Length: 157
Image (cartoon, rainbow, N blue to C red; front, side, top):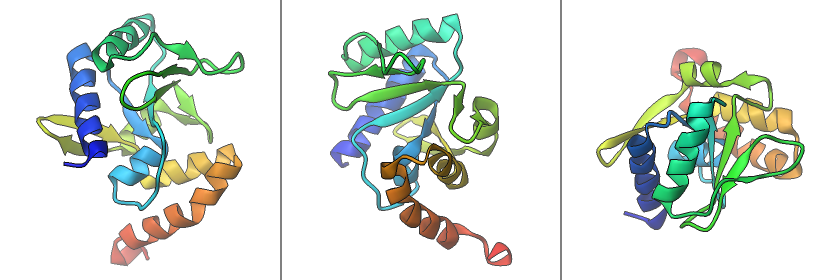
């Protein structure tokens, strides 16, 4: 098992242990689906509720990170830093007006160890990166779009 796969197992086990429903989004979601793409962190999408905020505190303990830190004053997102890999937690919606429930309805389930991870579809990853329009997102689009074309069933090509 690679160190990336090992970390995903640790993350999956921690999410289960704290009962936090989360969807892996962004480049990690693409990588889990076999897209040859690199990232330095794992992005999770969760619902913003007081209960989930407490679960995120518990997740930080399980992952042996520092307390959740606000990413910026302009965002409600938080980061868990200091563990094996940074984990960014985005609440409720990602660029492209993609809501938690809409992404969850199209998410794929991947088994990691004895756990299941919900992973955003490639279509949602692409839509979000297009909407965000940051240089790093634009740079990844060609690879993501090529990977999505390969995965289309023959009758949709």
